[in-house]
Every structure is written in structure tokens, then in C-alpha cells.
Length: 148
Image 1 (cartoon, one colour):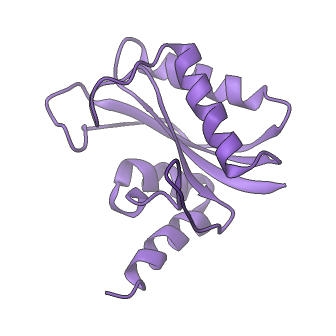
Image 2 (cartoon, rainbow, N blue to C red):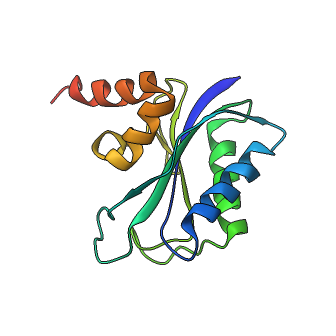
């Protein structure tokens, strides 16, 4: 089983309920075991700042899904909850990002692991540090030690 970290965020309608629903949906999947869940944080928007604050959380799971199958499950869960992609970094009903999958480094046209901007985003790192400080540290140290 692989250990994966997911980041969840929402800022439309009832963000806390949508994050809870996303986590419950993922945890109910037969190929996922929920290991840990962070507390929910409310944070200002990142990137596009003229929108409501976000609710953010992180979960740590174990799965036998491949990274791309996990991505597909996250996208299907978003769609099931009502996500429609309209604009980059814009408001959303739910967002589920695969942040890390074991210590896999992957760069495909569909998925980059670890998430390329996670080390810059407190709304990802803070919840992740609460449940998996080793992964959060790995994300930051990997970027700090990357060749220039």
C-alpha cells in the first residue's frame, strides 16, 4: 500500500460540509484507508485574491490505487460534489489535490508529484504538518535542496 497526502479546499456554498463530504466519499472507497485527517483551517485565497476565504484540510491515506487512478478518483469525487472548472485559482465548491504519493517523483501531462507548488502554500503545508510532518518537511526540503 502506498501512503498519499491529499489537500482539500472549498470556498463556495458550504465549504466545511463539502470538505467533510469529499473526505467521507474518499474514505468509503474500497481501495482507500483513511489514516489521518487535519483540522480545518480558514485561509485567504491564493493566486486570485478577489474571492471568499477558503476552508482547507489535509488527509493522509493508504491506497493500492496507482497515482493516476487516485487522481481520477479525486476528480470524480469533485465532480460528484458539483465542481465545475471555470477559472484557474478561482472560487470552487471543492478542490482535491494529490500532494504526495510515497516519495514518488512523477512529471506527466496529467499529474506532477510531489505537487509543484505545495512547498509555497501554507494552506497546504500547515494542515499537512499536523498529520504528516515528515511529508511536509520532505516537500520543503526537496525544494530547498534542489539545484538552481
